[in-house]
Length: 275
Image (cartoon, rainbow, N blue to C red):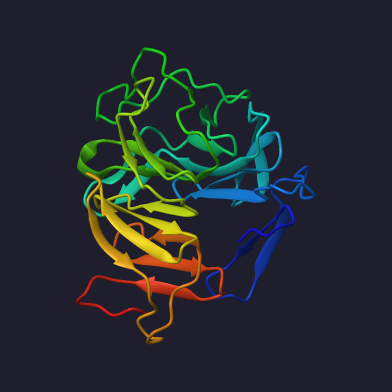
């Protein structure tokens, strides 16, 4: 768990013990537009990546609670979201571009790609995601993208169909899909409204967007709308609040949503019920 102060708390499953440390000790919290502390945990290898309103990105070994690498974020804007390009599925196990490849989104709309093994974070080569002997493509990859025009609300890595794509979205409502082998996005979906939250499922071709206008939209990768959620199912007649955060279950089609009215909901397919 992270908090507005630059601390990270690790809680054991039994909830009987926890560990506390400063994941980003130089974070700045007194700015009006601040992303605070931004975290991503990569279960493969037990690595935690920490950034936010600081010029540094740090990777931590969770087991030892030691910082294993620190490098500059290479942007004057605050880091707003990050993800690793590595995922797990029940069918194929771990796959992707590499557990050390980090994709970051910033407050100015830019995206940056880093390699957690490099002392400077520079990306020289990325895994092609294929089961080749070397597992590496021997030409330099692109590491900077500037197509978005506003605050990045989320970046997610998806492995559906073996595509190994990064999905990003900004406050202006543009959702872009990226193949990191290319210098520009492979397709763009216009949400057509301001967006405050975004989540893409890693193994199912769908994503969810949240709006300050009090609705959640479930969409497929081709841009078609599958469902729009405006009301709490177990609170008849009550509208959901402005959406502040969204998160899919890594394997199952379950969606968790947090709202500005302090409610949290868990959504499941129609044959299941909302918790």
